[in-house]
Image 1 (cartoon, rainbow, N blue to C red):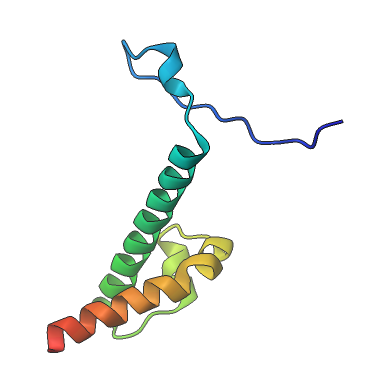
Image 2: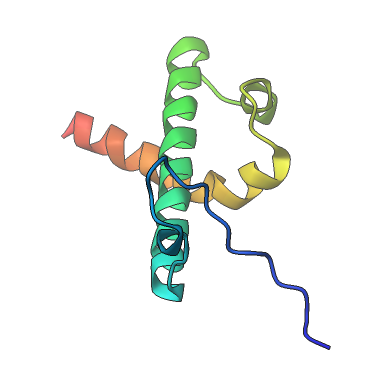
Length: 92
């Protein structure tokens, strides 16, 4: 018996050929990295906005904006590094 794997489905745009929905492992990895980076950038922007408005940020502030605790735990280190890097560039 094979282990359960998540199906690799993508929504087709009108007129897009059916064969276009299949992606290689490299394309999937590239897409997942891109999506991860977009989430990190979005979280970093939300952190900056909360800090600008309130002077500090707490998990509850980000939960109010729709972030989940597992996602925050996964992305917060990278997002905070991004925020720090942006702040250092502005200061320099």
